[in-house]
Image 1 (cartoon, rainbow, N blue to C red):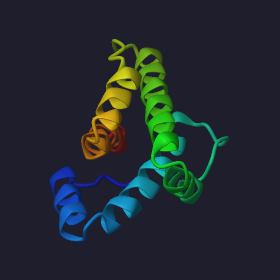
Image 2 (image 1 turned 90 degrees about the vertical axis):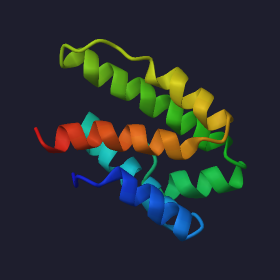
Image 3 (image 1 turned 45 degrees about the vertical axis):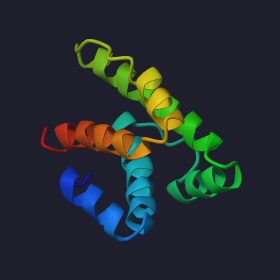
Length: 114
């Protein structure tokens, strides 16, 4: 897993009109699968395609599911559950997915330095 600067990722996503955001999302999907140890599930490319085809509905599902996986991982590590699944879903519905990307990247960065 690669540790990324969240501010730089957000700025690049804005400056490139979302193109870097798609790449960032691909990286988040792949690295989340590594972090949780689950090989099952769609690849990063498939998540992007399904999100586009379903007008972001699949993205909402993926974010909710990823939040649950992060919560499960935190509980296994002895930390409190943060209910990320619900938070990610609400933020995604409010069109604040970039905030979700930043929160997921923060969790990945914590584990990349471990």
